[in-house]
Image (cartoon, rainbow, N blue to C red; front, top):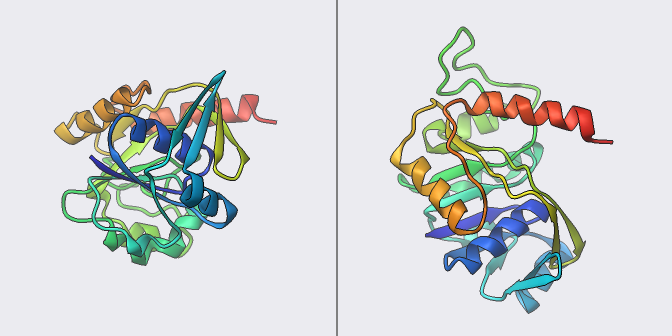
Length: 214
């Protein structure tokens, strides 16, 4: 698969190196010294006493330079996505899947949702409704990122713990495409259960954040 990681920070970089090591064509969107190092030397992932270097990543700070992808992993914070919504068309076509990796309540929470609040936007995370209006919810798959990782220095990611990335369709169905995403994640060495209620898992992760984060 052709995979683009938008926001190749700690978690995005961890996923990019693992997915590239599994044999997929991976592009990353990054910036600053991190981007410069990836372009010059590739991205290094440190896991315990093992190191993996991906030197064949396509790296850019301009998403509009990239071509349509099979899978887009959106690893930016919600407030950062707004600035690139207009440029996402370069990596998206009618078959592209976008997997969202944000912590907290996502902008799409009430999209493809059955209930009294169906179709409402979440203004607290998408105050201008640019994500709500600019990203087709039918292309989205939700994902909860449980691993901990950090950027040691530009171009170098250290994986600390965890490898779970459960995924789920917004409407709870087990589709062929969510099975493909789960299979790709498993191929890259992650644990990726398919959930029929991704929103409950979002709250479970939030409760964990409230309990254990400093």
